[in-house]
Amino acid sequence: MRWQRALRILVVNSGSSSLKLRIIGEGDRVMARRDFESAGGRLDPGQLAAAIRGMGRIDAVGHRVVHGGSAYSDAVLIDKAVCDTLTELAELAPLHQNAALAGIDTVGRILPDVPSVACFDTTFHQSMPAAAYTYALPADWRQRHGLRRFGFHGLSHRYAVHRAAELIGRPVMELRIVSCHLGAGASLAAVQYGRSVDTTMGFTPLEGLVMGSRSGSVDPGLLCWLQLHAGIGIEELVDGLERRSGLVGLAGTPDMRTVLERVEAGDGAAVLALQVYAHRLRAGIAAMAATLGGLDVLVFTGGVGENAPAVRAAAVDRLAFLGIGLDPSRNATAVPDADIGGGGAPVRTVVIGSREDLEIARCVRRVLQRG
Image 1 (cartoon, rainbow, N blue to C red):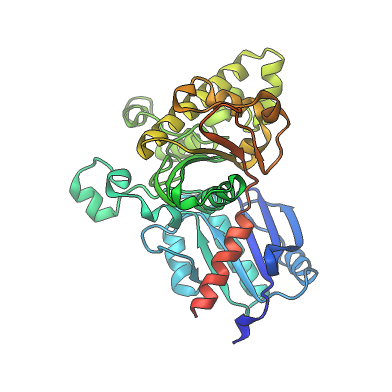
Image 2 (image 1 turned 90 degrees about the vertical axis):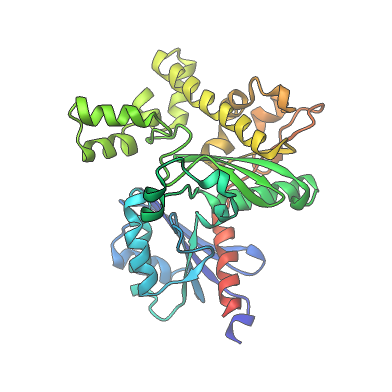
């Protein structure tokens, strides 16, 4: 009965370098917010406790967790068994999973009697068909180790596609949507009638597009060669792929804003970085549209997707054959949530503000109502 009142939900989004707190109340209103720079989502417990106490009543907590593996097909109440499973999955998403676990532990100590829910980036992609999630690897490897494509950014993709449908005034259940979450991490999702049917990330958040510091997809033979013939050990290899690749490896910075400023100044490395980034992104959008058998809506979300008109323009360059076209003026001045498509383009193109906090709050309500 206690959950029939208007809940005040603390949303905890622990990142690799930041910790974001939001209180979401009735009607999805943001009642309070605090953002911190932190290492691995960790803060001094006293500082965090003071911040949480200053945010008012808290009825439940929702944690963003990047990797739920095959264990969780929906959000779940957190207990010791859940934490043990998430710890086992940490090696598959080291930049984010450990931060989430640190957040769960610290907030749990501060609010020991408040129910906490783990909300997973992977669950949205559980609807992918076997053709999309199966790797062409030896069957015994796949079966013994549970090797498959999971996909990530699901909380962002799910919110974005539903908000896009609302923005253009059509039911999501009749739309074929490609969602582009572009930030420090980046992925695409092909969403058919509200369900994810393909995505660019895989077993880990390394697969797919070029990202801030992550490589995206590379030839596995190249990685084997580095180990066998160049003397690159596994720890150096992991560090290089996770932290020293992507825009960092191409232009020396993970920040797309800095890359674009250097492009304007004629910096050759930055120009190449943007070209590589856009090439992979453009090809990925076309591939997702092929999975869908056509396209009704193209969505841009995430820090880069929302704030970089030059990246959006580069992403759709040469995709007119899919029916995509931007209005240059709308694209240059767009703020979330906005339609930036050209007037004659059959595909609607929209910019959607990323609101993982609202999607997490909805997951929490659903779990608590389920009992």
